[in-house]
Length: 119
Image (cartoon, rainbow, N blue to C red; front, side):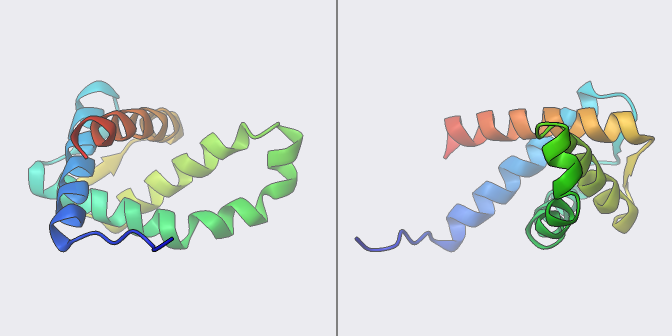
């Protein structure tokens, strides 16, 4: 079996769909704010990078509490990732922990649905 390779266009479309998911999330979740389309594009990039680099470290460090809560603490970890991305990027703001946690959950659902239908 050969590994599946994708073109650059695939990754650009993937990134833009994630940006649309960020925009939709900002319209639905109060306290989850994006200044415009380009802020959403960069927010999607930063969220992806933070998810790739920092999420596994946070998950490993919080593994005992994650086991005790039967995995529910993962929602908090995802909220932390969203707050970190918002802290790194002007034009993307999350006002509080509840909007970060609910925004991360809603973003994940919308992102999955959009990718399922368009990619």
